[in-house]
Image 1 (cartoon, rainbow, N blue to C red):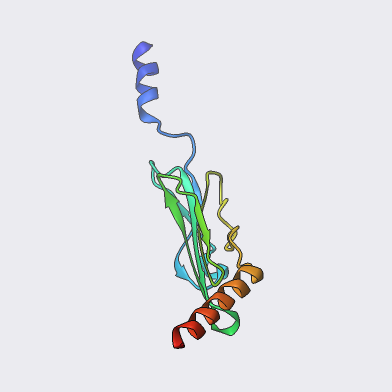
Image 2 (image 1 turned 180 degrees about the vertical axis):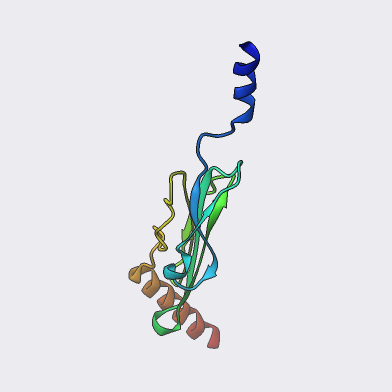
Amino acid sequence: MWVVVLGSGRCCGRAHTLICFSCSDASSNWACLKPVKCGENENHCVTTYVGVGIGDKSGQSISKGCSPICPSAGINLGIAAASVYCCDSFLCNISGSSNVKASYMVLALGILVSFIYVLRARE
């Protein structure tokens, strides 16, 4: 009887496997809705977002997948933003946008400072 109890504990791994959305360098979240089963040591779903530019001259890149670590981070420079978001539940990385959004006030201030710098450099 002890052999059966000990043997049954060895055969079974984790009770459930995490499933996350996955994509690489997609320009839209619509291209990032493919679910994948994570590996045994991958306990987090990760979304990486990078956005650059202004108006029609802007672009973004979204990557999603499974990860063994949770590297949450973000930066907003006005005309450029980047973030890494992680979570640990079933298909939790569905959102393509990040918490990092371009601020029009920061953008305007950056353009103004650049303009002043260029004018002073010409003197």
